[in-house]
Image 1: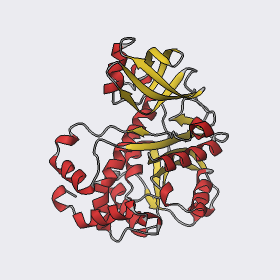
Image 2: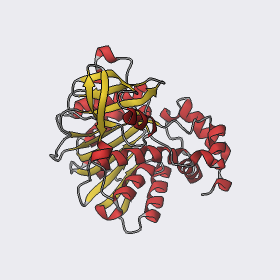
Image 3: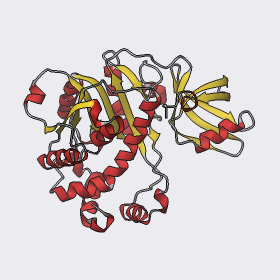
Image 4: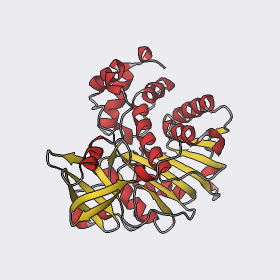
Amino acid sequence: MTWDEINWPVLERLREGFLHGGAAAGVYWKSAEDLANYDFTYGERIGWKWDAVLRELELRHWQPAPGASVFDWGCGSGIAARRVIAHFGAETFSGLTVWDHSTIAVDFASSVARNQFPSLQVAPATPRDFTDASPIGLLVISHVLNELSPAALADLERVVARAESVLWVEPGTSVVSRQLGAIRDRLINAFHVIAPCTHALPCPALAPENERHWCHFFAPPPAGIFADSNWVKFGQRAGIDLRSLPYAFLALDRRPRETLADGWSRIIGRPEHFKPYARFLNCDATGLAELTLPKRAAPALFKELERTRAPLVYRWTRAAAQVVGGESLAQINSPAE
C-alpha cells in the first residue's frame, strides 16, 4: 500500500470504533482493505512502540530461545509478530502461528507474514492450539486488554501459562497499564521479569499510596517523521499527536538468567525539564520515588535525559531524593555493532 491508495473513510470508521468502544463490541474488520489501511498507518505506529520495546530487550541482552515458535494471540494485522521476527531474524524461529477472533485478520496477517518471511512456516491457529497443553515458545500479545471481557482475559491467561516467553505491549493509559501490572504480579512466581522492571518485586505502582501513577513509557517516532507531509496529514486527519507514543509492556521468560544488579532504576513516563533542574518518577527495588536532578550537579546527564532516545534505565548517585550523578544502561551495555 502507498499513501495515494489510503482509504480515509475506512481509517475514520476504524478510529471512531477505537475511540468509542466499538473495538470491544466484536469483530470490527470488514475486509482485507480495512487491515491494509490500518497496518500502513495505525499499525505502523504500534510497530514503533514494538521497536522501542525490542531495542530495550536488546539492550538488556535478551534473546528468544533458538528455534522457538511464535504465537501471535489477537494478531490483528500481524504487525507485532512481524516486528519481533524481523528484529531477531526469521532464522531464529521455527514458525509463526496467528490467531484472532476475526478470520479476516488471520488471513491478512498470515498472508503478509508469508510474503515478508518466505522461509518461515506460517499457519493460522487451530482449535487444537487451545486444547493442547503443549508449551508455546514465544507468545506475542499486542493492544488487546481494552477489548477483553473477564472471560476472554481468563482464556488468554491460560494461554500465557503455557508460554516459555511472553512479549506483551499495550497502550500507555492508566487503566490498561495498571491492568497489565496486576497480570505481571500474578505471573512473577512462574516467570523471570525481563523488562521493563529492574526488580522482581510486586509492582509498586499498584500500591495504594501510588494510585495516581502508572507504569508507562514513550517510544520515539522515527527520525524525520515530522518532515513527512503524508504522516503530518495523517496526524491532522486522525487527530493524533505524532510526537506522543505512550505504551506499557511486559517481557517475561521462564529461563534462568542474570538480572540487573541492585541499584538500577527505570524512569516512568518521561522526565520534566525546567531551567535549573529535571524531575522524574523513578522505579526500583525500593519502590517509586520522585527524584530531581539539578542541572549544575551533572550538566551532561541533565542534557542526556532531555535528548536521549534510548530506554531510560539508569543507576543513580543520589543524595536522598536528589540525583547528583549516574550512568545509563545504554552507555555501558549497548548491543554490539
